Length: 421
Image (cartoon, rainbow, N blue to C red; front, side, top):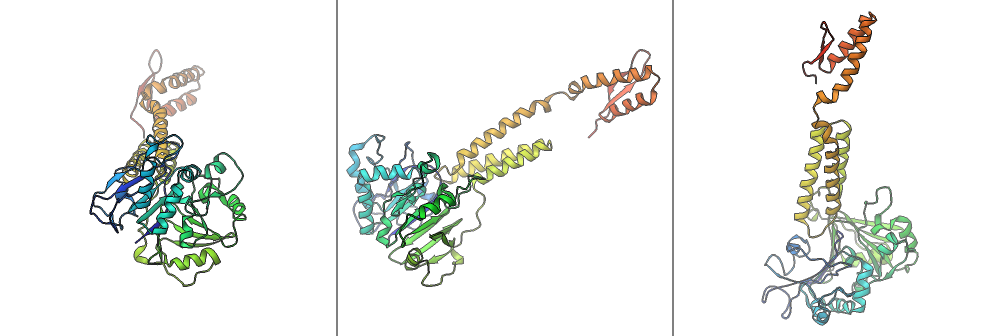
């Protein structure tokens, strides 16, 4: 069985090959490599639990049998690979892996080096031969279609909206599409960063450059699209959904939806489903909690509100909740997925609490002493003028903050009174 899985994930870039030990699973003999992932501008490793954490590997031949994890060598490109002469072996692993994983990074960088290094041909060959399970996430998922979003060039460098050529491996499934991950991204706040940071205006412009029979497949974050060509099935799982968009018109397939690959082709090519499908309730993932990015924003909001009302315990609780969330996400996922941003927020909140802490640590008597002295001096002036009602009003005001005034033969002497809430 072969599955092609598109997934929107975090922002780490890495290329990983996992290989089954001899005689464990698979659909044939030979070299059972299990994953190749693009490594972007910086080298990045793969967490040891990447297979366990990844939803796509669980139903495959790999399962939880302790696969040996290997990295395809010689395919990094750009002079970054310590073993460039191992490219032939790396390409063989791409072709023969039972479980192939490619993760986040730069779509443009991936296409530049994969095309130059024959990775594209190896992936095409893999699709034609229907070999193993192929799992592409984030930037790698963006390369699966005929067109690819050059996200960094457009969003960060300000280049005009345009497509670059993709791997076009989905043409072997008769899909003429552009895959757009991070389809429901909200990191921009007041800026529209949906559609892999393109926003509606840019995507609308780019759609005009697609042929009439082409479509955009939008994969939401924390969402998986499972395609099984042999079973003619497509399944959407996770937190969001799959959007099929043609000329500005969208059909949203939420998590839990199952349909045939034939139906997906109908949506992509004609905008219509041949057979009505209903989300399969058993496939719906339980309601997910907030992402670490959302948790960071919520904790920062709670901190600000607590600071405004002077609630130190609530400030501390927001910091502790964020720390616990960052720890949980770091231990539970194989990619950054906002954890670094959350750590930055955590450090900021700790520093902000430290800035206001000195006032709370100072002796209240020391803080009040200059004011009390001035009020006592004003009271003495009032008494000297025989304005005793005013002097008594000052005495009463001081008492409200816990300062009792006792008049003596020389001068009034302030003393701490009962503590006031």
